[in-house]
Length: 324
Ligand code: PMV
Image 1 (tube, rainbow, N blue to C red):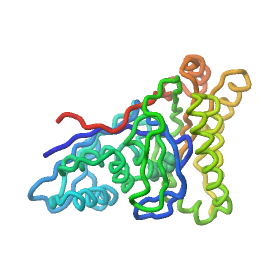
Image 2: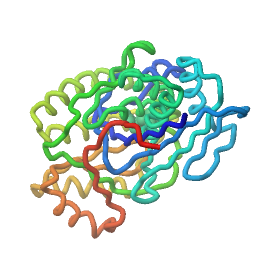
Image 3: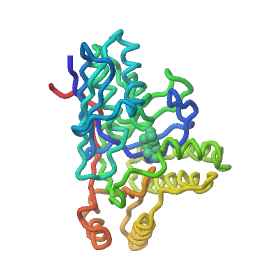
Image 4: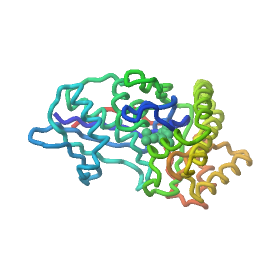
């Protein structure tokens, strides 16, 4: 049986940056994100007779057998849970407004977890789907749910899963991505976080910061306070990036235009337009603001970056099955 699923990517407001267990991808800390409508992955999985290994096709290109590591890890877990013995063909299409470099592994592995488990005849709860997606990529854990989502770090496979904080988000929060550099990142999130955990003297403090930020962020969400959410997300992101600068060897995801964007956002704020920023393991900036200010924000960003490098995204849905 072929099963097809769609999952949307998410952007963390309280970041995940470090693993406790590399194999199972158990994080050092909790994290919290917003699932977005604009970026998603559609994946079909088909367990077939007569295959001697798994196959992965992404955007119509077949991946070399040596590059299937994480996909195989998820499929192996599905085979283990279901008793399915055959190999699978995984066919995935990324939907991004353009070659955005924002197609994160989050949507890919959440869609894979849902499609593969159904193709093997499993009917997992969303919690168990999030645990399965986690085996492929940490951030994928959260993409099983829509809206605002928390990944509870836990301490083992059973206790590390996502849960919804607010699935229907309709208080006006919106994100706008500035596409600064759409090339593949130079330091992978996996390598970057590992180096940060091992070598940044600030890592223990980061863990304390995240614990406090999780409490404050959930309170801000309950109040539907976009300014407090944006402020906390910005501060959290910069503290995460301080871990990269304080690692040995030090590294950074900032590009020159990243700093320009940050300066512009601060300027807008000083002039009374409330908007905040976050960034991940790459130089792109994502603004957080109230949708009523969208037009003004786009007007201000366009002269510097050009309208076609600005992508507006709204809260999006959780992973779901598609009809074949
Ligand atoms: O799970 P990964 O490898 O996609 O790492 C995600 C790391 C960040 O995007 C920087 C933070 C996060 O919580 O999504």
